[in-house]
Length: 163
Image 1 (tube, one colour):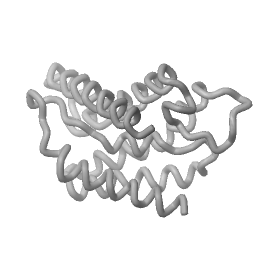
Image 2 (tube, one colour):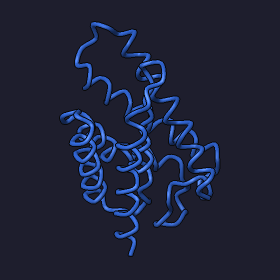
Image 3 (tube, rainbow, N blue to C red):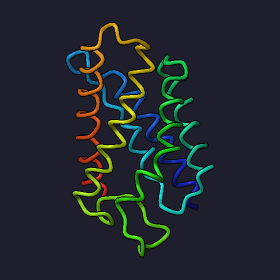
């Protein structure tokens, strides 16, 4: 049952990203990457191989629809690798093993910092791979900063309405 819910969430995130978010480019630098929300929502006891598989599948699907060969899949797989380690410091040791990383169970401030770290790392890797050079580092910084800010605000809004 949980796998079916995760698959439905996967499909919804891909559709929203491909049909809506890929067409939004604020000031030609900021693009919302709402699918990062999917990458950061794996519970504490989720198997690491499962996280990597889901993240790679999401990345390769978005690469196919967004014409970014390998960029999204590499970035998403890296986040899948780092997510358990980034999530661990924000929870108590005696908390439940099946704890979800959400605003309700973590608290607003911990969730906000956790999501900012995930979104920033994703945008940093994504735009570094996409531009594949630092010849225009001002544009690189603007893309990272703008996309991080826009994605971060959207994730906080979605999480606030979700609960």
